[in-house]
Image (cartoon, rainbow, N blue to C red; front, side):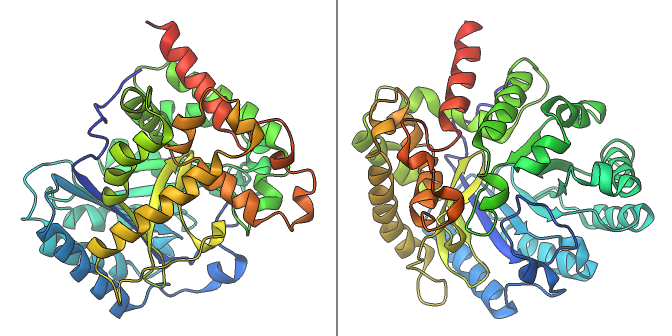
Length: 399
């Protein structure tokens, strides 16, 4: 199992996730966005909000020391908009931050669903490669919908051909991700998804299990299917020295620093720096903490949270102090379930962002789908225990 020494796990990297586009022609059941959100062909973040954010980032970097910066644009299909949008935004970030960083692991990533024809996609990739700047390299996050394997087979084959040619022929960086839902799990087995990355020699493959108020009927309706899928997928990756996924790397990098700490110690020693370095800005400019569980989990309204800070009124520096206190309360509350109290992973789980899943269930108890909610059973309320048991058992067995 490779480990990219991510105990730096961005300890000196500023990672800003920006929710600037919700438009998308896709229909992933596990997506965070609603159908209404996806219909627009315009950026969801207003220009003035984006410009204010860039100013706030520059201000934040002037009072903190960061080794590098990672800008991740989510959630929709950025190639569904005119290509000039992503080109001008990328150029703006490079001009503002390219010379402020001394190290070479910065990057600028944007999501794309790849619903355009192959020729158009390949043309876009060539154009983007022509402006790629090594100071902050540009990268595509290709979000695949396994349901297209059967319902739109020709599109699926074109998407795979583009990923292969983009990475192996054109040499333009691309990563592959999928939104895990019950339907997606039934449409594509863990091994089939694993083989997508292996066939194209990709170094990393991403899976997002992000149940939300919008998609719980698809993501939480059969937790056992999700657990079995993620367990098998995790085992495949842990037995491969050349391929990994971010949720595994995050756990392995934090394990040594978190084990042995109680929840209060962990909050003070580990979570405060994490909140400082991991931020999510939603379409309205709200400043949110962002965590890695199996997918990105910010304290977002779609998970039931109410934002307290906005870039229009607050600097990132002042927001971080208040956000940390909110995160601490949320994390501590998440350990009060009976099933959590007896779990050997309690502190580690709480301090690794999985509390967002528990909070979602609390906020969503009114939904009929949760009348037999895991919150009311003597079991883990999400997939955390399965992930921890699998990752740590495989790791320990190898030593």
